[in-house]
Each structure stands twice: as C-alpha cells, then as structure tokens.
Image (cartoon, rainbow, N blue to C red; front, side, top):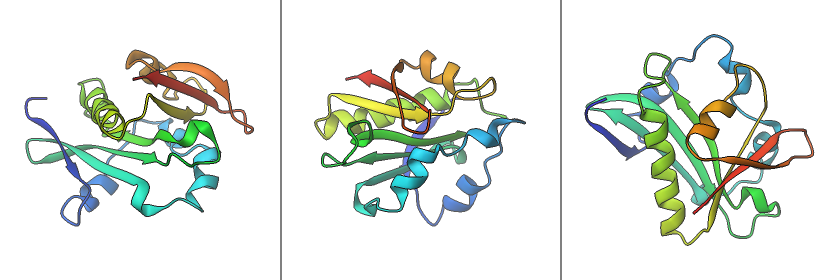
Length: 150
C-alpha cells in the first residue's frame, strides 16, 4: 500500500467497489440485521460512502451514517459497512478507511463512533478490536455493538 487515498463513491468507482472480493466465509457477515432494518428509513443525505484507492485501484469500500436524531443511540454516528478486497486485507486499507470515518465523525462533532456486527469465527470482530473498537452492548438481534470514543 503506497498511495492510499479516499474518494467519494462515484460513477467512476462504483463498479470496482461492487467487484471487491471477500475471503471465503466472510460473505455471511456483510450486513447485520440492525443495519438492514435501518436502511429502510435511512436518509441518503446522511449516508457517507467512500472508496479507498491504492493509486488508481479501488481496494476498499466504506459506508457510514451520521444522524444526530436516530432513534437508536448506537446508530447516530455509525460505521455501517467496510469491505476490503480479499487480496488487500491485512495491508492497512481497512484501518485507513476506519480512520477516514473517524475524521468525518469528528468533523461533524460526534464524540463516539459505533459499529454493529455479528460475532463469529470468520467475522470482523478481531479487525474492529485491532482498530480500536470496544464492545459495549448488544442489539435486539443479538449483534455486538462496539464503539470508539473520539
């Protein structure tokens, strides 16, 4: 990873973002039920979607949601999705994406960032812990709620 940078998701990058591959077993952890339910009422103006590029190559996609009036406190400033291409995992693109979301959350005046995920052997928990998230709660669907204090 030599030239990582973040760009807004656009017509030029969406195909590459949708073509990111996962390691075997990771697909079952893509979208927790909590986020699927919330997306029905999500305001597109509050959705922050970016791609991480290494030079000209899209290597990751990240979506966050910022809504100070969200009915669920753990969805007010939340990392909703992070996909890092299978061949790129473990090389810093995921941490770079999380850092970009943290910077955006701070810019918007939030004092914490949350993530909701399903626990499991091949799931994202180890990654989220490595980048600083700490489990603090559980959703009504049994998913883990973790946060970073900003």
